[in-house]
Image 1 (spheres, one colour):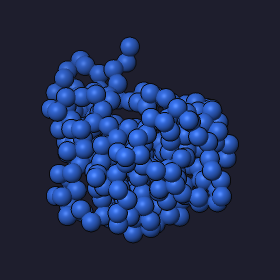
Image 2 (spheres, rainbow, N blue to C red):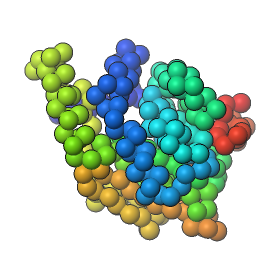
Image 3 (spheres, rainbow, N blue to C red):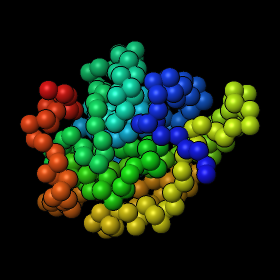
Image 4 (tube, helix red, strand yellow):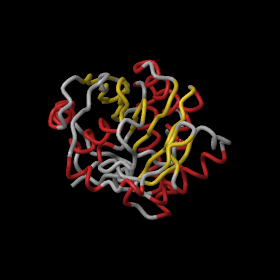
Length: 248
């Protein structure tokens, strides 16, 4: 069985190891992905949610390249704490905030965000259709989602993979890459979107990675999961302030 990396279920030490990996081997990825998101969606201002944000690298890149205010949401408390430190270190507190939450029950009201993004997280989601329904629920009419995984282009992908392999061989000879992710096929992603009630979506599967893009049409309520709605306690929702959600 291939060992896969799930940053939401790692120890504090392994969380720091992942942060080091992001800041060294894959640091170039995030500005490239952020630029592609902004170009492909055309959304450059408003409220953005980065789901499974890890140490907030993509959230910081998006806020740096646009007028978006970004909530970096992760289900790992250690990652949220690390994201908070990275945001503060970059003096981005006015534009990015770290929050704790799960994509299967996003702690936000309906129609809260203009843009929802995620990079390198959907591989480990427990229920992809449910996650897509939740993302659709929190999108505003006209809002868009850009979800997937990749390195931005073939050159960066190849260089990062070589560096990862060399580092894994040096630090853990004979062991598999600890940051490897399970692979999803584009057909699986499309089927999950359809199961969530999302019919109109675009699948990108090229050198930039595997991505799904979908939009909530104006006036469209979107698919709802009453079980999930009942699990979201309104009294515990964060407060929407200055373009993003903050804890009460």
